Amino acid sequence: MLFSSWQDIWRVLSIGAMSYIFLVIFLRIAGKRTLTKMNAFDLVVTVAIGSTLATIFLNKQVSLAEGLTAYVLLISLQYIVAWLSLHSPKFNKFIKANPELLYYRGHFVESALKENRVLRSEVLQAVRSGGHSSMDEIEAVVFETDGSMSVIQRSSSNSTMSTLSDIGQKKS
Image (cartoon, rainbow, N blue to C red; front, side, top):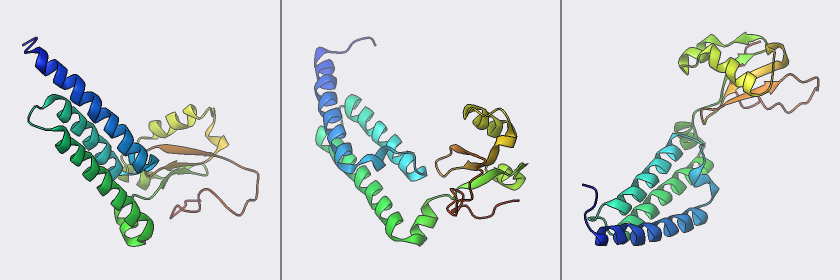
C-alpha cells in the first residue's frame, strides 16, 4: 500500500513532531549520561528510546501520552541504574565490565583477547587508527568498558598516576 489517508499522514507529522520535541526535552533534563556508550544498560535504554519513538510515530494504538510515559520510565530507570552504580560499589561491579589489557609492553594478552573475542588484527587496527606505525611506540592497548580500544603511547615520564591504574592484572 502506497497511501492510506491524509489523516494518517497528519497524525505522523503532528504526533511525531510532538514526541520528538518531548524526547529532546526529556533527554536534556536527564543529562548527557542518558545517551553515552558507557555500558550495556545505557545501550539498551538508547535502543528502547528509539523503538519507542518509532512506535509513537507509526502505531495508531499508542497515544502520545503513553509514549511520553514510556520515555519517562526508560530515562528514570537509566537514571536509577546510574545513581546506584555511583553510590554502590557492589552494584557498579555487577553492572559494568572492567577495562582489560589486550596488549602490554610488547606482548598481546592472549587470555584477554580470547575472553573478549578480539582479534590481534583489531588491536593493530586500533593502533594504526591512533596514527602509530610501530608497536614499539605503544605501552598498552586497553579494551574499555564501552567496547572501544584505547591506545596508550609509551612515556618517558615517571609519573606516579598511570592511566592504567584501574586495570587489574598487568602483564610485564
